[in-house]
Length: 84
Image (cartoon, rainbow, N blue to C red; front, side):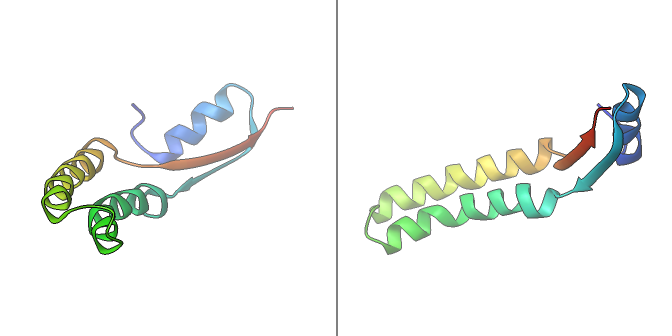
């Protein structure tokens, strides 16, 4: 594991990459995934694609999965760099 974004950038630079750009997109990507996952059972129920009983059980599982990803994923980074 890398302690921070600057250290992550330094790893790329240390192996010869140039113009290294690192963006923290945790909320956009991981947060969006988690929000969509939690909302999915209600959306399916609203469309009539899932019964009430199924949607309640699925909602619980989706919340647990979203919570797990929130606990174990500290950051979601996008990296671009150029190798000369």
